[in-house]
Length: 289
Image 1 (cartoon, helix red, strand yellow):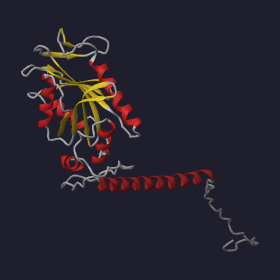
Image 2: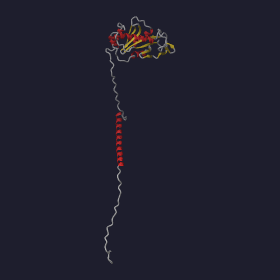
Image 3: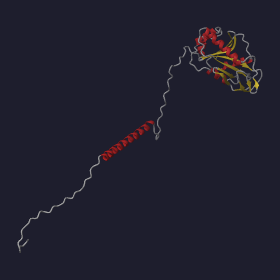
Image 4: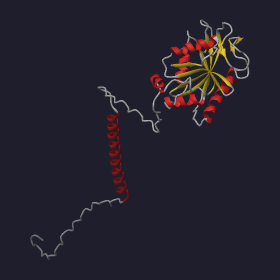
């Protein structure tokens, strides 16, 4: 990370600890420390390839450890005691919001797009003191981060991920922002920014994010695949259709048989008619008469 401190700046112990943290980070970023923007004194402005954030750095006047609780309308606390911060006059969140507004307004007046300007209050406890949680949220885009040289992980995570947008802050754009904020003499060269990790050309966000292809899974022996399942269901469907067709034919036949009954056949026994007898005159004592 590139760190630039205004010449002649009188940094507090917490601010010196904060600068030491920044110098140890390998992140692609530029940090400007102790700058005057308009009528506002700002502790730090940091650019990354994805955006910029304004930081308000606060140390402690005594060693305090415990659970951090913050509120917009009441003093911040460490466990049951008030947080004994440096320069306790005024709310740190109010000072931070004023600094964010000053930076954004200055860039807009210079006809530059500031994007979404984030901000954070950085609490720097004494080394060995533990304050948790290490990061909490005041509102979207406004965080409170705890960090010192001995416990700087959460601060680094914040600086590397406070903005999830595309890499639109190129080296030229960062130089333009620094010039608008009156930091042209303090800003690094374009070559230094490119070497630090800034792009030369802005990356545009794709209009349609391609979906990754589904991994092909080879079927295991003995385990039915979707294709086998579909074939099985097709066979079952054809069998059911065939059964319904047979039942329909049988039902149709029965309906026709019951609506047109056949007449019953009666057996008639023919009667035999005896042959006609002829009359013969018989004479007395005539044979066969």
